Length: 135
Image (spheres, rainbow, N blue to C red):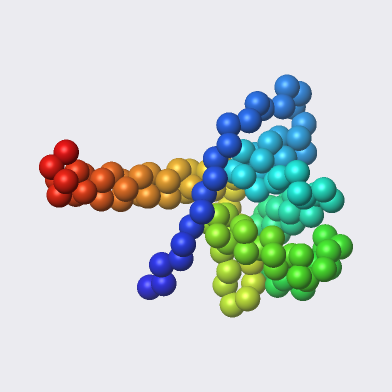
């Protein structure tokens, strides 16, 4: 089994006041540390939305297919896919990419489990260090 390093970022951001799916998707992605001011052309946002759409149809897409669908270069798509893979939001199967799970609610629950496992590991190691240092 390959253990992949995972980077989960959580940013507490005020939720949009009005119910608008696009604004809420942007808020969700921003809260997960995905969308930053550097993403001026919303390329990562567009890729994220395309991955959500493709998951609805259970489609696994190559980086070339994703690039074509969102009108970006393959290099830009691969760059963003690596960020999504690293965060645990997207998985890769035979050079095809898909949202890790079937919907966003389950995705957040899976990320919650990832964070808890990481914190449990950190707590166990902290306890061991405390004991060794007699704190």
